[in-house]
Structure formats: structure tokens, C-alpha cells
Image (cartoon, rainbow, N blue to C red; front, side):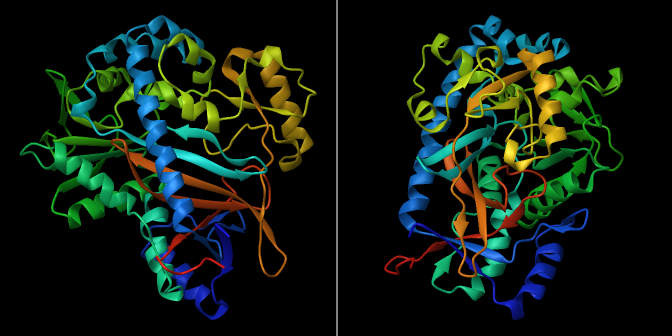
Length: 406
């Protein structure tokens, strides 16, 4: 078969989990009392891996084309549910040069009764780098017939290295008081340092802007930076103090990952305007379930689910069997009150993978794409069809050539 869940040998799991925490930067291995480090590994066939890679690259070509089309017709962005204060700054994007920045995306794939489907693209600040780069390496010794696949952190480093000038200082920008955000940036920062660059961690308001270039004002790191790697959602920037001049992120010429152009695809409402963009979206249309305005759907029709336009981490998705009735009813109320901030998406039937001992889990494979090239897999599993903050992180290994994935 193409996919197989196999339990990590019980006598090794405890050490593996410690390694994930201390070597894999998984500082938040639990949500409340719920362990989020899976004791399974996902074994994937080479053909399956190649197909997911191919789709991610096709989706990226189409997404970038949509972004460029929207730059020429910003009036269409009125339908994407951006807060007014953000929309006012979209005109700053019109000097965007794709070749001068690093474009990072993560497409979330799910096995369904109708083949693979994608639920969304994490276009703004996708996470999962240590989980896709370190976790497979840590577990690989227990499964010698498989290999870890592509290393997303190294792919990101290579993308920066290819576009950097002589200034090797990279600012890793995040909400520094949040450990789950800081762990993502700390891993990448340490990796970039290991590869010979000069990374440092910063808050998004640690900059001033001169001639559209980012100048760090953080003590010990003062001066112009060569690049910015941002893990601070764009809709959070508006909460910064005025002195931060967060608007300058939108038109900076400093090498950025991700540049705020990523906002367009981050909106789940983008499919509502595909046909007005006059660009190819064949792969998107094939893999993403039908999307409509919420007002067009009876909220009692369980063939459809609702999603917040700028939602993240699976929050606010109305998969009835996966959430409490209280949460479900609250979502329907919110949709009715603010329909322009939501989308309706035709529900796909996620097919859970069964284990040898009778357990079954729903799967999400996040496929990274960096500057148009596939760049590794981030796996999560859940006993429920909604993949959210309670899902477990699972390493993904690819079968070596000449060996069957039985």
C-alpha cells in the first residue's frame, strides 16, 4: 500500500520522545494532558511521495500566477475578508518582485474516499520545519528500509543563500513570548547558524525602515539586515504600536520570507474569485473541494463545512462529528452573523488509516514548497477528522527504491 502506520518499538519510544523534545525543538509536546508526539511513524511509498511533490509544485505555479493577477486588480481583494486596516496597505505590494524574495508555502493533503484532497494552503507563516526535518532523522534508525525524504529547513536555507548579497544577517521574526512560535524560529536560527549565516531572533517591532530596507534596532544586532524570516501572522502586525511602522513590511526591498504577498492565498475565500483572475487553476480545482459563499448553503446541510477566511491550525472548522455541539452551534452563529468572514467548503470524507492493533487515525500531510520546489513533508494524525492543535506530530519516511511498502 502507499501509506502505512507502524508503531515505533515500545522499548525505543521514550528515548525517541526525549530526542524529539531536546533535539527536535518540540518544546510543547503536550496540549493540556494530551501527548502530541505520536508513537507511530508514517511509511510512504516513493510513488506517493513523488505525486504529492508534483502537485505541490503545480499548485505553487498556479498560486503565484493568482498573486500576480491580483496585484493588477486589487479591487478583487475586497472579497478576501481582510480587515480594512490591512486592505489600505495592499497598494504597497505593487512593487513586489517575486525573484527578490523567498516564497514559502505548505499544502495540507488528506487521503479521502475520492483520492487525495487538499484542505488549504498555509501561505503566510507555515510551521512544521523541525517536525519535517529532524523527526524523520531521529526515527529513521528504527526503520532502515526507509529514508527521511527532503529536508525542509535545508531547502529554506538554500533559498536564502541563493538570494542573499554580502550581508549574511538573517532576522527570525516571531512573537518571542510564545514558546510554540519561538521553537520554530530557534530551530531555523540554529540551523542557519550551523550552515554559516548570521541569524538572530527578533520581535516584529525591532526594526526601523530606511529607503524600504529593514534596519534592526535590537541591542547587539543593530544595522541593516540581509533578510527577514517572519513567523508572525500578518493580521497580528496591526496590533503593534504606531512607532513600529508595520506597514513597511508590505513594501520592503529586504529579502523576505514570507513577503506579505502571501496574504492573498492565506484567505480561504480566494477560490471565490479564481474565475475573475484569468489564470490557470486546474490543479487547485482538482484537489480543493468546491468552495462557495456561506449564504448559498443551508447551514443544516452536513455535506458542507464552514471555515473562517483567515483561520489557522484547524480552528473554527465546523466538522460536526469532531467537535462539541457547543462549538458547532457557535460556529453556525458566527457564520450567520459575519458571512463575509467565512467560506463554505464541500466536505470530503477523510479515510482514516488503520494500525495493526486496531487503532485508526485521520492523516494530514503538509507538503512544503519553497520558491516553487517541493521541500519535505510534515505529518499529523488525529482520531478525529479535524486536524487541529490536538493532533499528534508524526514523522514520515519514504520507502527506499527496490523495497515494497507492504
